[in-house]
Amino acid sequence: MSGVIQHTAFKNGATGKAGDHADYIAGIGKNAGKEDVIHCEDGNIPTWATDASDFFRAADEFERKEYTMKRKHLDGTTFDKTIKGRAYKEFEWSIPRGIKDPVAWAKRVAEEALGNDFPYRLAVHDAVASDGGRNLNMHLMFSDRKLDGVERDRELFFKRAKTGFYKHRKTGEMIAHDPATGGAAKDRFWNSKDRPKWARHLYESHVQKEIPDFKLVRSSNPEPKIGPKLKGRTEWEKEYEIKRAATESSVIQIRALKSEMLAVETELVEARKEQLQAQLVRARASGSVGSEAIAKPVPVSQPKPKPDWSKFKDVASVGRPLQKPETALPVTAKPIKTQDVAAIEVQDQVDQVEWRKRVEALPEVERKRAGAALTFAGHALAAIQEAGGDASRVDWAVVEMVAAEESLVENGQEPDRVVDAILLYSPGQVSQVQHERVRQMVARLAETGRDHDSSINAGPDGP
Image 1 (tube, rainbow, N blue to C red):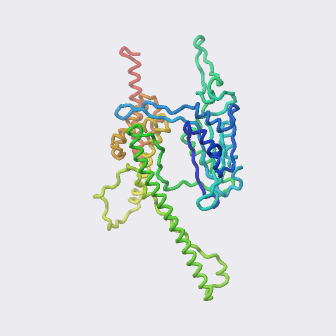
Image 2 (cartoon, one colour):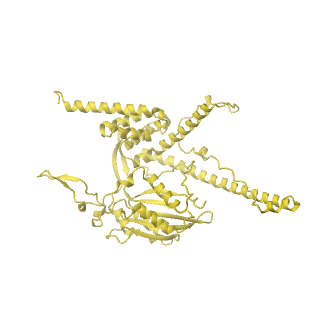
Image 3 (tube, helix red, strand yellow):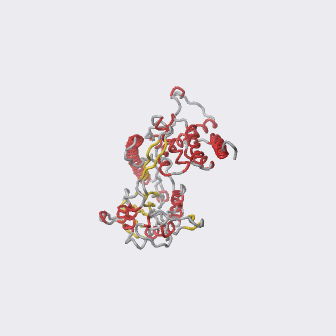
C-alpha cells in the first residue's frame, strides 16, 4: 500500500525555544543549509510581527517563563515543582508517498486545523528515507492564543487575557472586562486530553481522501518512552535521570536488534526467491512445466512475522509482581488448559501491561494534568519514592483514598471528577473489579466532607 509511512505527533514547545524552532523548520538563519525544505509559509501573523520567526521570538520573550509551585508529599511535607512555560504547539506528521501533491495536501490540513484563528508557520520537508525513497513530512507550528480582531502591541498580545466581569466598587454593577486591556486568550480546546485523538483522526481522514484504504495503525508493541531530560535538582529528578538513562540504553539495544532481524529476514526472502527461480528454470529445461505455468508469477513466500518485542521490555525498574518461582510449573510440565483458565491468564497479562503503562505515565500525568488527576499523580509518585522506587510495594488503595480526600475536602473537586481521575490513572484500577469500591469510597468521603462543612457553618449554637 502506498500509504504505509505513518508518523503523527502533537507537541508542546517551551519558552526560549520557539524562535529557533521556527527558523529550523523553515531552513533559515543558522539552518540555511537545510536542503529538505520544499515549502514554507506563515499564516494569521499579527501586524506587529514581520513573520512567524519574529512572532515566536516575541513569544519566547513575553510568554510565561519557567516557574515553581508548592506541592505536597504523601507524608505532608512540601516540595517545589518546576513548571515550564509554553510558547507554541506543533503538529508533526508524515505525508504518505501516495499523496499526489504533498504541499497542497499540507495546506488543506492546516486550513482545517487552524483556519483564520491562530498564528502559524507551515513547513513541508522532503528528505531521503532509509529505503532510498521519499521521506515527506509536515510541521505545523502555531500559537494557541486565538485572534479576536483586537489590535494589540508586541508585549500585550502575550499578557493574561481579560475575560468575564468585575464588580464596580461604587455602584456594585457587574461590568464586562475590556478585552483590549489584556492579551489574546488561550483557547482551552488545545489542552483537552482528547486532543491527540482528535489530531490522529484529522490526519487519517485527510489521507483517506487520496488513499481510501489507508488506516492509521498504532504499534501493538511500541518502544518504551524515554521521557524528557530533567535538571536533576531534586532527589526524585536524580533518580528519574538514572532510570531514564537505563531506558535509553535499552531502547538503543532494541532498535539495533530490530535492524539485525530485519536484515536477516530480507536475506531469507531474497534467498527463497533465488531458490524458486532456480527450480523453475530446471522445470522448464526438463519440460515438466507448460508455457501457461511458466507465464504465471513465481510464488514468493512471505517473511516470517516479526518476534514479539514485548519480551525485551525490561527497561523499567519497577513492575507488577509476577508469579513466584516456587509456585511456577516445572519447565517439563505441559498442563492442559481449559478455556476459562486460558482466558484468565490472557486477562492477567493484559492487566500487567496496563499496570506498567499507568506507572510509567504518572510523571507525565503530573506535568500535563490538573484537578484530581494532578493531585493523585503527586501522591502516587511520592508513594513510589517512599517505597524505594518499587511501585509494586505501594498500597494503591491508601494512595487513592488520600488523594480523593484532598481533592474533595481541600480542593473542592466534584466527586464524579475524582472517581474518573482515579479509575483512569491509578495502577490499582487496571481491573474493573475494584471500580465500585472506588465509587463507594469517594461517595463516603464526599458525604463526610459535607457533614463537616455543615457542622462548621452551624457553630456551637446552631445556624
